[in-house]
Amino acid sequence: MKTIKSFLQKVAFQVLVYRLHSFYSPFKLH
Image (tube, rainbow, N blue to C red; front, side, top):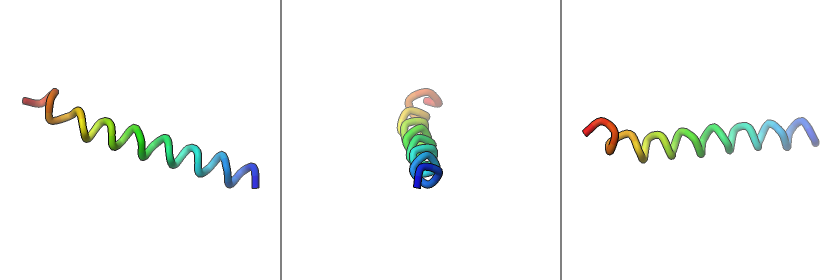
């Protein structure tokens, strides 16, 4: 259970970073 929980936290963090990056990238590019 602990390994699954840490795995889900890693995935959630990566998804959050990806969404933030995709959200801010248009402002940086243009």
